[in-house]
Image (cartoon, rainbow, N blue to C red; front, side, top):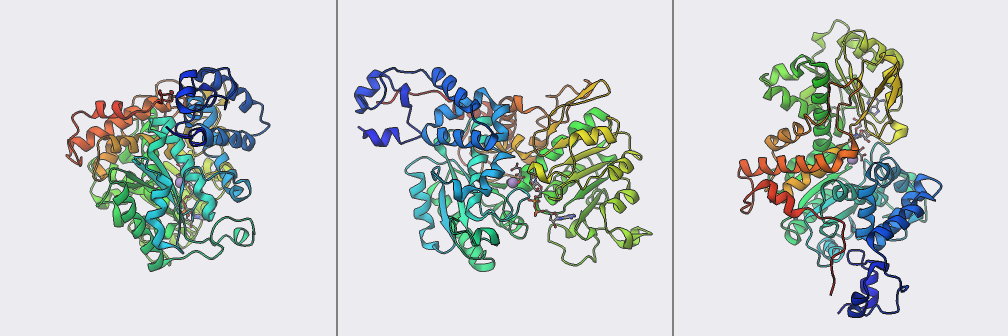
Length: 545
Ligand SMILES: NC(=O)c1ccc[n+]([C@@H]2O[C@H](COP(=O)([O-])OP(=O)(O)OC[C@H]3O[C@@H](n4cnc5c(N)ncnc54)[C@H](O)[C@@H]3O)[C@@H](O)[C@H]2O)c1
Ligand SMILES: O=C(O)C[C@H](O)C(=O)O
Ligand SMILES: [Mn+2]
């Protein structure tokens, strides 16, 4: 029998006032709770009323996190009931505010594992202690060097790992007892945090190079040893490490980088949705990616793969891309190119005005893109002049301002609709309201990897995938087609968050099927759909005795 304290303080088992009289007897809880036994429905009604009484989104989030810390079943039942309302509160954009304030607001470690670069010998012990005997199938790890577009947030960034995992459960149905958020505290270069006595992470500069990669390697080794059936999801690593780490492990274990691959997937899915509306061919598009970092180059690579699958040679396909970063259009002689940028550079000889192509405005004027993607972290950079210039040369400009959180978006959906007279096909990183314009209501898709990673991850885990390869990623990008009725005026390029659970399940099934078709499963799995159905957790109380 468990002790009273251990069961009431265990969020994976706790039911609070919903413990039945029989359970109270059996578990030694008699007299430790008010006498009326509530149903989960009643608890959910009461908790939602408390949620609604909170004055702002951060307060709402803090209330929900308390509930999460106390009772996962009730938390996820509420999130199931109110997914559209809760997403921007437990996830982006409010998660950004909670990260900035994490050390000041801290009350509970939320069952995360905290690894320190200064204590490499305890990596395995840290993972083991945090898992506390649970059967971990999914790990989301961050070192928080590139939290959304807000830069380095050190240990505070653990909230993004917790938030991503909440979305996994709400969207795809992973059992919350089978997940583990991990913070790798490699130091921080955020001066504000370093100067703050209340900052909860290591008070020193970020460690790079061999010492850092050794910690990463020890972490991966321990993670695989302790949780051999798990999928490893990398989140918000810095530009100089994200791709290096992915390349090192992607052919060895079941793993993916959400900012590179998750974002690549949602953007390609959105572009395919947009082309369904405009009835154009992807091979006729010219892509400008503004912000050629982790996400920007992940997106370019996923589109490149699609162009090659559509029949273009590698060389032909690369000619469709124009990567723009701080330096302007990236040329093969541009200094300080990253490894990911190099294959997407252009030759100065292709342009009469190559030396003038140092700004987005100049590139758009010269190139006449049909697709413009923003992952630059620079707010307001898709200006009216640039957008109007783009729209003057293409019938249905595809424009995705994806930088998060809200304050960093390259443009708003409402402005893009107005500036293009309703022609733009848009997806935004954070949720955007419908836009009413000249008698049409435009629905705006959320171009956020949250639409893709839960289904992708769940499908990989259900199918016991050894690795994730390009074939499966491509299948996943095509999985959302047909969900939106693209014949409706103002249709969105991506399905709405209100259908997140339905399309995450479809995506998981397609991903699992792709793994099985390629015989990439570690162990026998008889049927993809059945495996996905069998793994799905629902927020209902189980009998405990
Ligand atoms: N919507 C989504 O699903 C999604 C997914 C991943 C990232 N993002 C967003 O994309 C942004 C970038 O994320 P990341 O992980 O790629 O970060 P990153 O740091 O790897 O990349 C940002 C890039 O923008 C460049 N940049 C900075 N200032 C610029 C300027 N003035 N002009 C042009 N380029 C400039 C940087 O040099 C860098 O290459 C963030 O805001 C993040 O929230 C959104
Ligand atoms: O976290 C998000 O909202 C999406 C993405 O992973 C990001 O880094 O911005
Ligand atoms: Mn991210």
